[in-house]
Length: 155
Image (cartoon, rainbow, N blue to C red):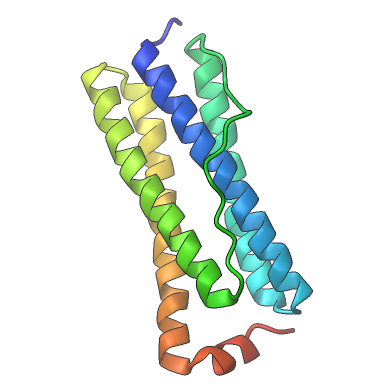
C-alpha cells in the first residue's frame, strides 16, 4: 500500500529518535552494570529493549507503506557521567520523543492514515510510561539523597 510521503518521512524521523535512544540507554545500562548497580542496569536495559520494539514497529510500518527505512541516521547521544545526569538526559530524550509522537499522530490524522496513527498512539503511551518512570527515579533521588538511593540498586 503506497503511503503518504509525509507520513513516511515522519516515521523515518521517529526511527532516528528511537535508534538514538536505544544506543543512549544501552550505554547508560552498561555503565550502571559496571558500577554494580544491577537493578538500574536491568531497568534501563528493559527500557532500551522497549525502544528496540518501537524501532521494529516503525520499520515494519515504513515497509508496509512502501517506503525505505533509514537506519543510518541518529540524533546526538547524551551520555551522563553519573546516575543523576543519565536520568536527566534520558528524561529529555523521552520528552522530545513525546513531542515528536504527538506531532506525528496529528499528521497521520490529517493524512487519514488511521492505522499508522493508532500504532503511534500505542508507542506514545509507552513513551509516557518511560518518562513517568524516569521522573519517579528523579523524585526518589531527591527524596532519599543519591547515596541512599544508589544503595538500594545493588544486588
